[in-house]
Image (cartoon, rainbow, N blue to C red):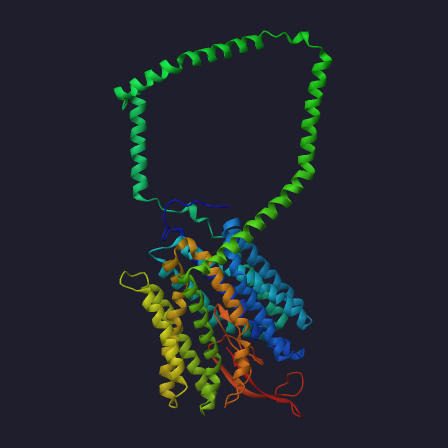
Length: 532
């Protein structure tokens, strides 16, 4: 289904309702996605899940969450944003509902992976709608989207811990599935952008001119007809008038002959035979169309739509032939990889320097606050005429790389706090502009292709981040196996599962029996993180 849009983005109006719906959708789905570590940590430990199994459950969830992004553009083009998002979020809530009955690790693996698939399919359209509904105010709208994801990172851990304390695992999972189901309210606001496009002033002036000409012609049919035009018309009539008159007379005689036919001279049986043959043929055609052809039509329609989606995905992958698109995709993916890997190591590096766990948690909270503030400020400023997205995006990447390099040489805690805060600002600048650089440099029409390829590459990269953790085990200071996730991009293998909470504390624990705290006798020493 190819939609031809005439006009320009509304840049407001119902677009703000769409952004509000996207905020609700991203917030709810992010709470569901990032709550894995807090929600199921006790369940996994009680079932004796290995560190590899724990990591693969979330990694598969994140992989499907991002990999489905390559199908987002084609599916929304074929079915519309509202249908895709509503079906996806509904299925995500159903997947979470089935987790209420989880009695094994593999049951959790299957349905949490489905939650990642449908959750990603419901969340990804939000970023494409941003491009369709906004142009000059795109930065401000992006700030609201960023606040939805970041708010979930703060509120989610607190909400899940409260639900676990009050209603246990099954009750908390059931309530969360209901909360995810309410994201349908947000997706219901996704009206087709064609309903709200603004018409250009040139189009309006052209329509007014055409209307005036039409009124003039109705008032005076000969208005605008020159003598030259009349002479040409006279020659044309003189040249073809005889043949035209002959044709018209022949048609009149034929009509007269047909009207003089006496139908009574035709035997009734012949008429009944012809009538019965026509009726039988039409009835047979209707029966066939009512039974088999309708089924064949549905099947053929589904296969045709599927083929169109696949062809669009293949065509979108060809966007990588553009060097600019390749730089945007790979630059964003590598930056996110470095950001997540550094985020995982910081708490343990600070602790290795001899500082307390509360001080390490404070540094992470400081980075989160700086990240959140930088996202809002950068997105808001990007609408200004003097703001250069290219330089700002590059500056964010440079800040991330420089602060990451400097951090390894620091010893003083004050210096560490300053560097961590600056690092958080760099992350906020870069991540907030990742979505805005795609339509800015590639055009709004190529945004779905670039965004889909970016999500696909990101899914494979984050799934392979586990190798980084294993390589870190050979460092001078042994890293406890942890799992850290952040925002839209998550996925590092862990031994003890850590949520995306911005504040948490670490404690030593001897897991001697079924995860009982302080159990003695040959238990495995490990670092546990209490998140909130």
